[in-house]
Length: 196
Image (cartoon, rainbow, N blue to C red; front, side):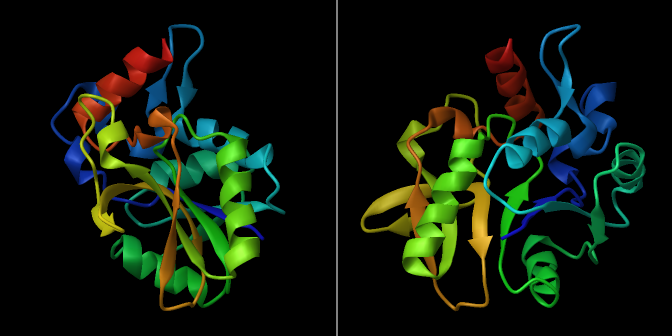
């Protein structure tokens, strides 16, 4: 199975911050001075160390700098319409009947997370939604999407196995750091202070 890293969003919730935050989100850096990495590169490192067969970076008309950067560092890309997260996933499903989708803004993703969700797919043969219990969210992090499952409130953490199946099974991670999804300036501050 391949991974598709989603890096085509408008980053509308990041607007209005310091100059660094005016960049396309995939290209924002996290880390200490002299050891900074782009969010996209951090995700790519984990993907390359995982059991996926290959990966693509999904870019859109909203992310021309990210597309140029991918070309420069030879990451293969696929262009999606950029009409929204769900719409882009459906667009990708037309060409890729199953794939691991990973958002470009989860700096603490590890290959073990990817391998665990692949293993869950092998058992269930269904779409899998990676999630974190809401009560594990670090202070200062804004959940992007929550849902209820068996009486618990879960937060989508940006890694999923996407198929044409109608239903999705949650796969619950207990790694607090995986819950850090950089959607706002406050999220970025938490990611930067945690990475140091």
